[in-house]
Image (cartoon, rainbow, N blue to C red; front, side, top):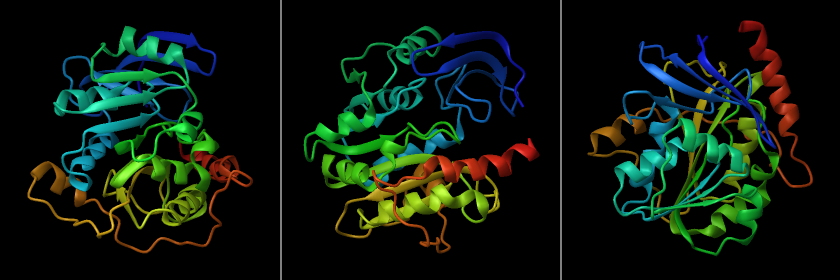
Length: 284
């Protein structure tokens, strides 16, 4: 649906990356990074530092679920939209970003205005390998941004063993927030249902938000999962206007827990997403 110009086609060790300029649905000039035909991994406005992708706004829920957070881990760099936004908005934040592909970081520097910052520490490593040895209680907030593609999710970050490592790496009232592409019900919802069940088996509070409230439950869409370690149930209202608008998109219906949790031994993520992909392609 994007008209591309100034296309750059870059092969890295891990991906075929395409970077191009286009316009968003409001006619604003954007630069886009994509690694598959179905989803955009990152985008920036050419004339502004405001977030160009809607789902990125929901990472600001971090300040609601973990007020006065400081230490943040981002798993998945791509165009580095999320780290840049947090550095721009939060003066005291310290960020570790784990990105498996060093060339992706080069691309972010060359085309997506990524700049060095003393508060930003970039680690080029597989996210699960990093989580496996991360210190207990190290982070206030973990933002999982490695599911940027709708149909190619790194399974090793989805399993209960990975989720336990995420939980272990968080402070006692820490929060993890991530984006995934799925439907909530129907044939395309298998990964979402299994992943939600997996997080609920580890975290006491798991919430789901629709990025676009008008999307039907059966349609493939961006969903935000928020999992809090807090012993008390978090409030779902806020006097903060920006946060209140995000909280309004909470999904309040019950979510089927009919699928087994994902494990390192059995994580049929590709199978679930192949069903979703077959549902998606005929309509696009």
